[in-house]
Amino acid sequence: MDNDASVTMSLFDAQAVKIHNQLEQMGVDPRVFVATSVNPKIVGGRLFLNATSGTHIYFDKETDAGERLFFRLVEQDTGLPPVAPLLKSYAKVEKLSITELNDFVLSAASQGGDDDNGDDNKDAGLVSRKMDGGGCSKSGKASAKSKKARKA
Image (cartoon, rainbow, N blue to C red; front, side, top):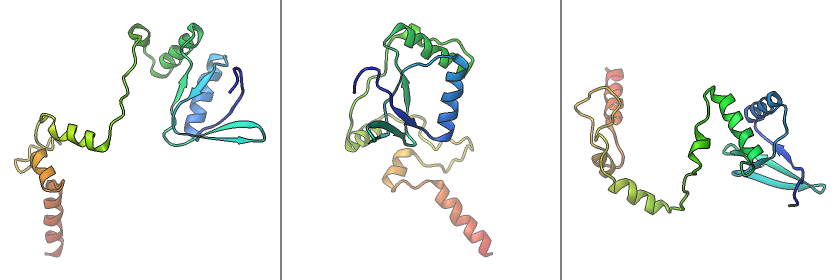
């Protein structure tokens, strides 16, 4: 795609209204880059970017003007002064297979051990027991008890 090419972006209602309102309030026309979950189509020689439910919109922050604009949007959305300009770093993204993810989750140290829903149930099973038992939790026991109660 050539520099300064115009594209038509199609967003879900809530996304479209939010981004339109933010851009209108700022009175500027920044460049945006749609990075994920976009279904591109070329119709009549024009590029259309159709958003899906997982679409994320990233503003061009490689220029000083673009970066200032982006952080104004963040500040406007949260009401808090942005700290991100001080960080200047981005999360590292690594590709992972489902098997690797499962191995990581199952071998990780326990973080509390019970279902941690705050009800202090002494019968709550450990996560490892739930995994070994096919992922069952105490909710199965509770639903069986409620079925018996309804029959009575």
